[in-house]
Image (cartoon, rainbow, N blue to C red; front, side, top):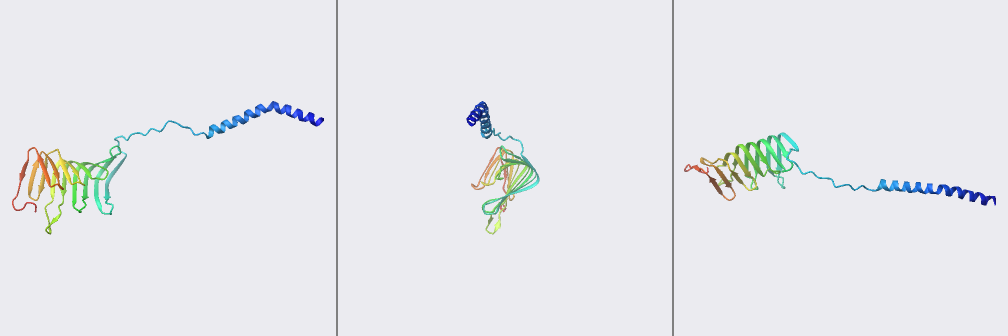
Length: 207
């Protein structure tokens, strides 16, 4: 009888603390659930690139190669700024050497330039000069094509040179000039516009 009375007294006291115990267990479970639940916030906002340079170079040389390992082009300059929004380089005192699939060389120089990522398109500004070396014909090299202007837009992969400024063109001792020009080397077409002048020297043209 004494054992039954003690057991009854235990359960009586335990029933007093049972609600507190259950509340403690529920509180602990809620805490662990909140702690381990991932928080889903608003998606991160990706800022659009601005026209501010993201890196700067001085007295640099950048080389670009064909998949075969041959040199495709080399760009040198005194200073350069890269703009991520347009993926372009603005270069001071630029020098460019570019080789086509036949290995023919085109060089370009200017006070300042704007190029795309692979230097296949170059806008030359101030004392712009583009010289296109020709292929060797009949065992001897013909005279190079030379263009001079305050602005020349050279597309090196397609061998096109354009200008909306007065331009001078020379091949050997032949000279031409105009207020604007489109030159397509692959199509063998030259278009000079505006006040066009030309001087042909007989017997030495193209040599």
